[in-house]
Length: 498
Image (tube, rainbow, N blue to C red):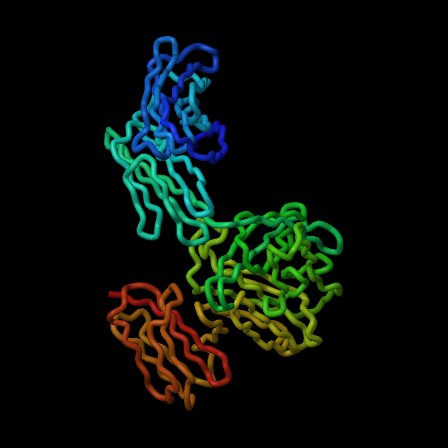
């Protein structure tokens, strides 16, 4: 259910007072016509209160509450109420610092005549320091019980709680509520913890702003093969900004995404900050030393080409990409995209495509000659496929480039591999898969599940009959990869049945 928020929000920390004192809060609740709203609940709470105080407005719309403040500090006080208008909940929150005396908070809410028997999970967040956060339950409905989950083994059932997050990064805070009438709801909010900054920038092509595209941001924590956080932000009219960047080294890769369906000139290529097309030679960005805004100038190929040749195939990703709908920023919810570059015999990058998911690709109008397909994934060794387009074979079709968790491969259809005479059977199978081949030796035979996890491997397999036992695996699709001595791979998808 969509909710609107009207929030007066500030954070203030004041030195503690040595004397305890009474603090009085009062006000009036009116509707959007200025009429008082009687018998309406108002919640008043702070982080040091175990449960919020609930007061009900008088026939004239007034409410009043007197709080005893311990005197060790001046707490942050929240006054909160709600209304149900236009088929949606609306929260009204006022936030201020308590001092000796009286504070008046008047709230104007939309007029509502009926409230559905529903509950909606919601909470407010207050940053106390870089790693301490306070959370306040502001859920809608008659909440009987609740449960917070903060990760790192931390949870709570209180209305308000203060949590210490030990690690820098984005932390998902989850709230589950249960209310009368068998109603339950939950919500999750991602909290940036630690000292962080943001960076903005511009992407241009020959001094013209890129109309549409994406910037992928790669953060390295430790060595190049350790934890990598991937961020994706949109480029609009050349501009982009990246929130929640922690003080570390980053790589930025700009990818053009404007309409490329027709012929265009020049060809603009995915480019890293610093002008490189490859992450191995890209320039890192450091928040301490790199001024903002950041400028990325897209690399391009400035010659047009026409010819009878073409190269086509499919990128198949088996490296655990999660589905759409996940948060992109500073998490590993997406794997780095695959950059597929087309390089001519003069070592010039003449075209490129980028893939987040499995998809077909095609390069058309190519002159006959020698080419290289360079497959690149951030922080992993690149993979190159040599291709020759000749008068006898001007088209190279049905290439299957497989991206696994720890390696890349180009697949060969075993039914068309005359050199090895490979036969893989039965398919589907419930017990064993047999592999017959005539070659002297395969470097390895591997079995992967649908997520790209290696389940079985046998090295230096001699020619003859070989079998893989799949009887203990769950039903589903698996991939067998036979690695040849020349570096090419034979792949076959196997269906396991009961």
